Amino acid sequence: MIYLNGDFMPIEEARIPVLDRGFIFGDGVYEVIPVYSRKPFRLAEHLLRLQHSLDGIRLSNPHSDKKWSELLEQIIAGNESDDQSLYLHVTRGVARREHAFPKGVMPTVFIMSNPLLAPPEELLATGVAAITANDNRWLRCDIKAISLLPNVLLRQMATDVGAIETVLLREGFMTEGAASNIFVIKEGILLAPPKNHLMLPGITYDVVLELAAANEIPHEVREVSEYEVRTAEEILLTSSTKEIMPITRLDDKPVGDGKPGTMFTLLHQLYQNYKSTVMRGNANVSAF
Ligand code: PDD
Image (cartoon, rainbow, N blue to C red; front, top):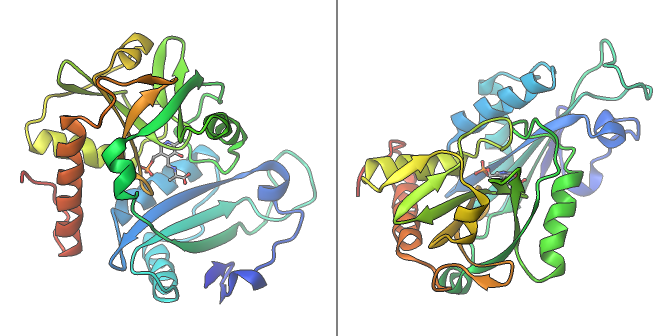
C-alpha cells in the first residue's frame, strides 16, 4: 500500500501526471526512513532533514511532523514486513513546463514502503568492494534531492566492475559514497568528514558518531584526504538501508589486511545493541 496526495492505494494503481515537476525537472526532495519491528528509526531526525531539504529548494512543507507521523504509521500498518524502508517524496507539483516556480500549485506527496533486508551475514564477514571516482555532483549535496543522475552514474561505475559503492573524492578529499556516508580508520582513529554542503548529513552517520562518543572510541570529525583513504586500516560505509558495512577492497586493492577490522566489528555490535534498545523504547545512545 502506498500514499499519494491524500489517498492510500496499491502501488499499481498510483498515477501522476506527466507534467509533474518531479518527472520534468527532478524538482523535489525525498527521505528514506528505516523501520524496525514496525517502529520508524530516528523519525524526528529524518523529518528535520526533510525540512532542511525542503528549505533548500524553497518548497514549503506540505505536512506538520504530526501529520507525517500519522501517514507513515498508516503505511507501516498497511505493509507486511515488520522491518521496512519508508520512501517519502515531495515534488513542486504539476504545472506547465517553465523553469521558474509555478504559483498556487499543490506539491505532490508520495510515500511507499519496501521490505528492509539487513545486509547478508556473508557480506559482513568478508566485506565489500568499492571503487573511487571524482565527485562531479553539484555543491548542495546536503539537500536530499530527487535529481540523482550524478549519483546514479557514479554508482553504476561500481556496479559495472562488481563493486557495491563508489567512494567520492573532491579536490583531494573524500566526501561520501554515491548513496552512503564513508568513514575511514587511520592509526586506530575513526575519521569522519565534517557535515557541510559537500555531503548528505546521514542519520546513520550521526548514530555512528554518537556511539563512538558514548563508548570512548577515538574519533575525529575533520577533512579526510585521498591519501588517508588509500592507506586506511579500515573503511566503513553507512546508510539507513545498509546500516554499517566494511569496505575491504578499494579500486581492486585490499583495505588494510583485506578483512573487516576491529572497528567495524565493534561499531556493528554497538549499532545492533542500540537498535534493540530503541525498539524497546529508549532512544538515547549510551555506552554498552
Ligand atoms: N541514501 N549520502 C548519500 C548520497 C545518500 O544517498 C545516503 C542515503 C546517505 C546516508 O544517509 P542515511 O544514513 O541518512 O541513510 C549518504 C538512501 C538510503 C537512498 O538514497 O536510498
